[in-house]
Image 1 (cartoon, rainbow, N blue to C red):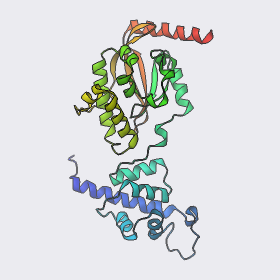
Image 2: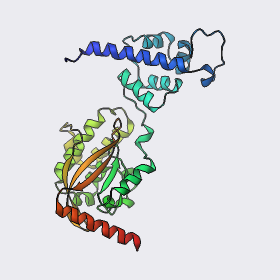
Image 3: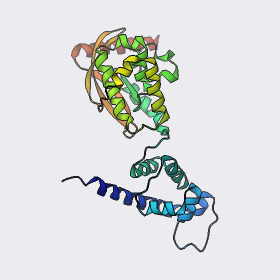
Image 4: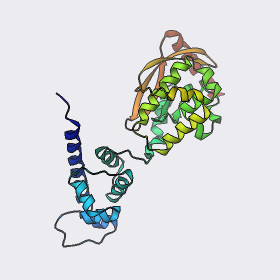
Length: 288
């Protein structure tokens, strides 16, 4: 089936946005947002005038938004509407998607994980595993993974980003074989992910910081290559058990913001034996 023309698709999206806002407006009782209840209300929920006043926008403009008119809503205005209508995180994301805008507020679940995620990572041993978000911030990892980068615990929190580490920490570069290919793929995946976050300060600041610190990053960045995450084989030189050939797999925790667990499994029998040996060493060290 052929896709709808862009104009028709935009019109459908605007109508859906209007219906979504009306439904959410009608479910909010005045007293929920500090307004006195009124017995003379003909319809449930808030009036358009009340939403417009609380969000700091014109009544006519907000009416047009609910009517699906072809008007532009800035991220700041959408943020005010979301707060006025008491949106939770999924509702807020849906609002910005329907409005065709980029949410400039960093999602709360982008910077932290539940304790259950760390438990999963620990249970995946002897397979090295870590959790990152779409920006490649390092959120969590297990012993098998960190043993390959023994200096990670001493890295400042602001540097715990895989892109930053691979371009600015020589220890990481020595560990990762096929460095050029790995670095190029990471930059291409980062650029693809950033398309949905181009207005977010944290993303822009990371790119600017990498440009200042690494001419190699700038060289890769200026290629304008994009690539989705994909499962591949990676070679690393572990400081204790030697060469490992690892196939990495993504387990998605938050598709919209790119949060995922990356698990490395052995790509050959020799790597499997070396991972078993690594697990034995880690257990002996923990028991000592």
